[in-house]
Amino acid sequence: MKMVRFIQILFFLGLALVNWAQNNAVVIDDNAYIVINGGVNGTEAVLVVDQPHQNGIITTGSGGNIITQGEFDYVKWNIGTSTGAYTVPFTADANNAKIPLTVNITGAGTGAGYIAFSSWDVSPAGFDNTPWPSQVTHMAGANGNPDVSDYVVDRFWVIDVNDPLGTGETYSAIPSPTINFTYNTGYAPEMGGGNLLTEGLLGGQHFDPVGENWHGSGAGVGTATGIWGADNASGLVSGVTPPAGEWYRTWTLSDYSSPLPVELTYFDLKCEEEGVVVFWETVSEVNASHFEIHKSSNGVDYELIGTVQAMGNSSNPVTYSYTDQYSSAANMAYRLTEVDNNGSRRVLSSSMVSGCVSDATFEAYGTLNGDVVITLNSSFKDDYDVMLFDALGKQVSASQNISVVKGFNQFELSYNHLAFGTYLLQVVNDRESFTKKITIR
Image (cartoon, rainbow, N blue to C red):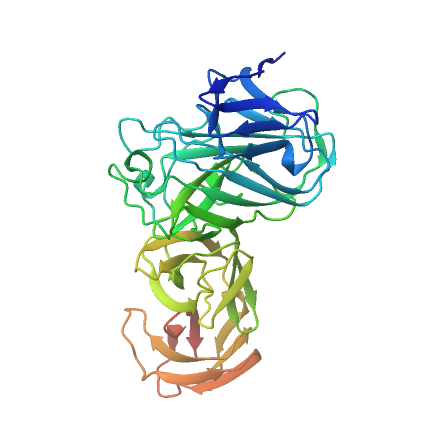
């Protein structure tokens, strides 16, 4: 069973006062501080706000400050089914900068749930965002780099609705939030110290512990890119809105120029009348320029066959397709690559499709008068060259061109100048080849 240390604090700092109002609200007067420290997983340190109204925490006079010094130092706000903008007046531990966090509940949850808040700085001796929160397994970049911590603020936020304290107070349907993050403007230990961040280009990203990726499920480590919100370049990232029905615990802020990974919903290949159709969907995009489609016959050596313009910047699902008209009877691998506006590239996915034209539909035989009959039942319109070789592999007749239409095709070609014997017939173009041993009489 979980052990929870509930904070009950009443103290003065100069003339500053922290108290509990009669309506169970926490009132912080004239720049007083509440410091929550020492919590660990299973024995959390918790300040309880037992007031579902958005005024459950009130700051007056010159303001107020709440410092949580670790992941398991929580402000537990018993919001329940209420809506409104809930602001926790967080303050940075090291330099006392005010960095309030606001979660605007736009759609009420159902049940007796609460939200647990915490925020703390990391990387005291560097800028690698360590130690990571308990859910996080990597800081890999969407550009393929195994670690892009230098493009991420050295701070994490926890916003948890899944009863992390084990009190049994749960939501049967979670609320719908929009989140505003405040960051520690210009403060070197969080924004500098080796970081390559640009104020004005930050956005919110959450970690999905199931898919082990940043911002979205199913992407895998180091795949697609994207972040949310608008940065006013003065310390506020606003309008961070997760997809409806989803809530994630662990958040940070990343630079738009090198964000952490996001979800590529799917990548699929289908044989259609017009060729192999490549389908894919992104759940969000940031500064995306275009997509490249590459094809390979061996899964190793790929060639570029086409490009598709990207949406650019989007926090909504976007579907794309590309048709490869030059389909093949052989299995083919296709690879999808995203190119950002800054020229950086990353492979998003790859897959293989079985041959869309089967050589079982190809037949050829020689007649008694020296002609050769070719039948080809094709799913596509295309042109082929027909060549004839003797038993030694020498081409014995000039190439002849045939134009194949979709459906059943039959061609009769004359080779009456050739001697009686066995020959190898080849029907070929730049993407596939059919061969057949025939006898000319």
